[in-house]
Length: 283
Image 1 (tube, rainbow, N blue to C red):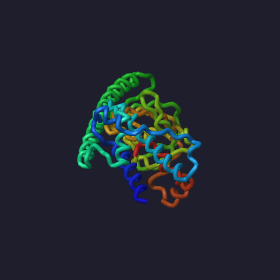
Image 2 (image 1 turned 90 degrees about the vertical axis):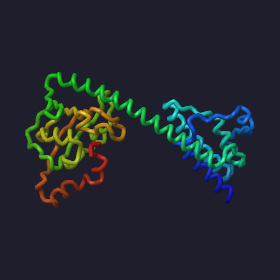
Image 3 (image 1 turned 180 degrees about the horizontal axis):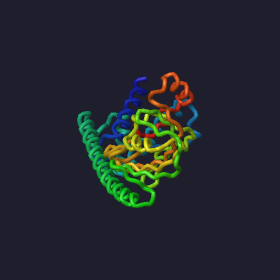
């Protein structure tokens, strides 16, 4: 039981440490690496007992997690020596560590800070590039026939005109939509899910609140939303900061803010299970 606890603690330490800790470039003399005992290869046919299967599963899951984490960090320009990592794991099992607990914590904290700095720098660079690409896209799109630019900077194009009422900001609207970035990447789509979305129009991003109020029921518009009317510098989920958002929107229905609560609840009962998932990423 004590040994199992040690294994669990070691796994936790490695997973937590390597998901955002350790120092920026582990370095140890080659002789130290060579001291580590070679790791015997294990074949599937050898995993016959409960204990062996459990042990191998723990090691395999740790290895995959660490490998995946290090691969992502390599994209930031940080590369760690796999042999030294394995050497540290082996020394941890045998209590032959070359570093004290205090030194380990210091190294892991420094690595964590270094990775965070790299991530922050990368995010700023990406946001700057996205902002520039968005400006160019808005300038070119505004020149297209059929595109109208509002005072706020919102751009819209009527794809299919409707004949119904137009919503107010307080109304609950039901829509089908597909959202893409300027490079064509789809980040959200009720059409792909096969289920329209319903939500109060004043609880989404400003570009949606303004744009959908221009639409009569039955209409299909293309809304091109500048970053300041979308998610701004912060971005959201898979949407990078400073992104221009492009939505193809079809307005299917409006529930007036003045409608009785019971009536709205009844009409939307079938949509309750998917309402949260179906909202465009615009809260």
